[in-house]
Amino acid sequence: MEGVVISEKGLLECGRKCTPSPFLLKTYMLVEDLATDDVISWNEEGTAFVVWQPAEFARDLLPTLFKHSNFSSFVRQLNTYGFRKVATNRWEFCNEKFKKGERELLSEIRRRRAWNNNKQHHTVQNQDSDEDQRSSSTSSSSGYINLVDENKRLKKENAVLNSELTSMKWKCKELVDLVSIYNQKKEEDEANENDKRPMLFGVRLDVQQGDRRIKRNRAEIGENASILLSQSCK
Image (tube, rainbow, N blue to C red; front, side, top):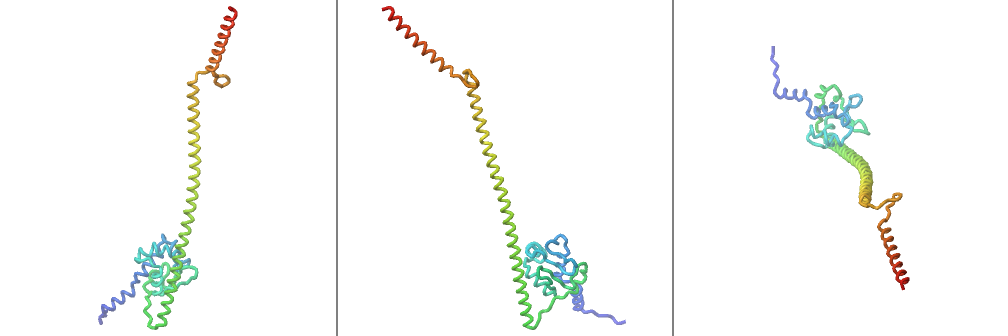
């Protein structure tokens, strides 16, 4: 029986064909991760995946596996592996070998070779440029929307804080007024306790003034009596 001789080059070529590229494996992992379904997930049929939030995807997920945060670069990589954007209103990408639950098909996806035709090459560059512009526009729009939402939230919080501050100012004023009234009442009570004059219907009588008037009247009477006595004696 004749032996079968397989060259080292053939083994390497077979290994490359049987093993999916790291880019495809990482992308598949991101799509499969249920924890990030609000950012990237399969479509309803499981035949394509959707990047629901490009800005968050580029900022939070791309750096974890691809060591960059450029969404446009990610889209260009997809294009080189034959992915197509299949929706106009969202970032949905499709490849017939990239399906939910069929990870073994990834090894059949091949990276496209560079085209020799200059016209075709320019077409690809133009497509990439368009994707870049759309990606940049989407990222900028998403960032602007986030800033607007954050500004609205801060305005609401500021209004609530101003309302609470006004309420606290009124409460503080009422407290100061109460303390002032209390101190005034306390001073009046202490003054009443020290005042020994009699009261009539809750009003203090000025006894000292009455005593002085009586003494003055008595003095006048005594003086008049003295005058009368002196005149009678004459």
